[in-house]
Image 1 (cartoon, rainbow, N blue to C red):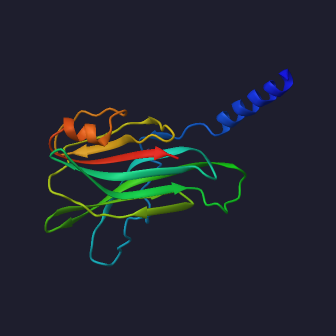
Image 2: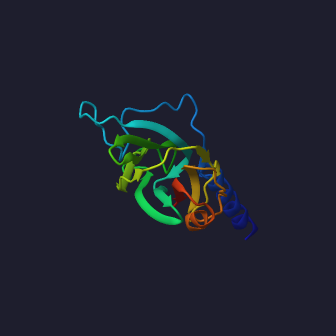
Image 3: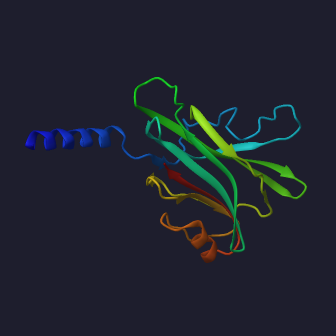
Length: 195
């Protein structure tokens, strides 16, 4: 009995070591902007200039079933509008054993329209991804930005990134609805969770 408990605890320790939490960090100089991102239109020669910037890097060990789910949310005067969402992870047919270290970059693209700046949300680095798109228009200029780095909790949505037309108060444990109630103005918010 003691041996069975010891083996089980060792296996659980090894699993948690190998498949530790996914972590969010600031993009580095080496995390260059790529030519194509999932869900951001590739429009070279199409007459539309989309400026893309990496806003966050999510990295860690992905199991075959691990999914990063991220959503772009627009907050305007206390109202929450969920716009674009994506799920990124490993392809089920990908080789490399049950776990694989991955780095997924989240990005925002913008293009000028007659009504303001159109916002695109996308990712780079996943071998499997799915998403839904909405292309909101930002009316006001960005004054400030903030990334909330650190580990991502499984099964719990948290705020990762905020940029807005004025200063704001944000905490990682806030829901996007709480953020909207406490911050008047126009903001682009990215929330994420790991499933």
